[in-house]
Image (cartoon, rainbow, N blue to C red; front, side, top):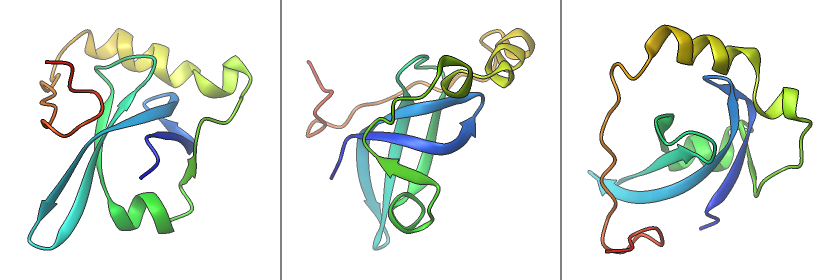
Length: 99
């Protein structure tokens, strides 16, 4: 599975993400994606959403800064200031597990 992804639209104002965990629950494959700019911005998505929705491109697409880091990100960070941040747990088989 490709580890680097670009969202077709900003997520909390950011578009470049890394797939850090893959889990299987009840036959469904889920992925934990973390922003390459801000690790506090992370989302869970399904295999179907990542591969078939048209909302993601494999790899990182070179975008102008104002498209890859939008005003939405600045607003999100100024409102939330660290509130509601979930801890990220990396699976042992993740490429990003450095322990």
